[in-house]
Image 1 (cartoon, rainbow, N blue to C red):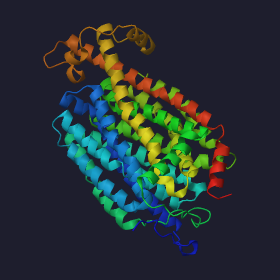
Image 2 (cartoon, rainbow, N blue to C red; image 1 turned 135 degrees about the vertical axis):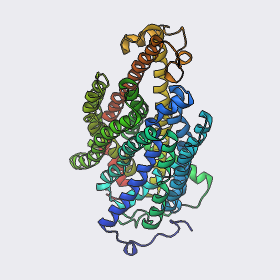
Image 3 (cartoon, one colour; image 1 turned 30 degrees about the vertical axis):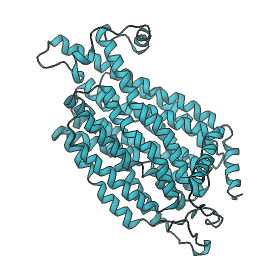
Image 4 (tube, rainbow, N blue to C red; image 1 turned 45 degrees about the horizontal axis):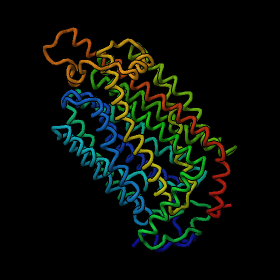
Length: 499
């Protein structure tokens, strides 16, 4: 029987203590952490995969982006529709089992095609976490605490990225990239069991002002009804100026983040000659600490500022992204990894403030019975463009800069190189053929080895910096989203009968 078939009266609804809510949120953060470990570990061990399987950076970007994102994106909405009607805890538990299993299978891949197939499987499983998790959190935490709770949940992103980088780098260095995939995949099974046993399915609308008493019962299933529901949500998310621009902001920022993040570990390896364990430790700890602080502050600070004006749900991300971008660029222009790592401790604090406020606004704009679907539609748009396109785009840019550098020299500067590339320069001898896997073949001359190395290092730096510039574009959309946000949120509350 559907969870929504019979809604209990407000007086009969269970009371959840703050300590139990903390347990629920901790378990969901843990699930999201493993979600991001399994999703992003490929960036840390990507250089080892590139060398072993002799693939290009474009192919590496496809493995970290589009091939994961396709099923992850397209399955998110139907899974969310199930989550609106059925037990969300069961959906999350099953999803964890699926993506963990496919992550472990990635370690058995012997070709690019096989690894790509397993990455499709990881995406299939991971599609089942975020929409039901956002819906659960919104039922456990009232509107004024929702951005903070969703920001805590979003800590799974920096924590997972950090742990994936540190553990993946160490395992790849001391064992192999195959062992890394296998060992980070298996612990997810334990998390799935813990969530199934310890999290209770709350009544829909439990945290609303009226205790969910005014919640409309989900209409009987029909395909026409499903499309009507989704169209109503699409109109809310993309038909209202402030919400549209906040979704454009999170999408464009994520495009730059996924794209640059895929190649930051390879950059440290290529530019400074660090081994996989060192790269994992540096990028994991530096990125994880600053991003974690920024993610948490984004929710807490914005919830407090929003007491003055809800415009801060958009203004905080706009300001944060504008501050973070130039600091990131300065970091990747440093001649030593020590200087780069030290500077990188700062920008993540400003960069990641956009997550909690954006998720909170999306959840607060829709009716209770539509929250999982709203999250899924937002993530469909975000992941298809950002996760699907960001890493391949950056890989493509790096491959083109590497080709240009290989034939024209690697010291033209980013803007000068772009101008000459757009003017038709950059052909000639193929970098991919002369430097398979980004390095000169065994027995090649020292001159060719140096030429391959310098061309790839400068190309990687250029690709990462170009991707980082998307943050400024995203910040502009957040600023536009602040216009009319107060009115939009007030209308949404009135539509739900909360005013």
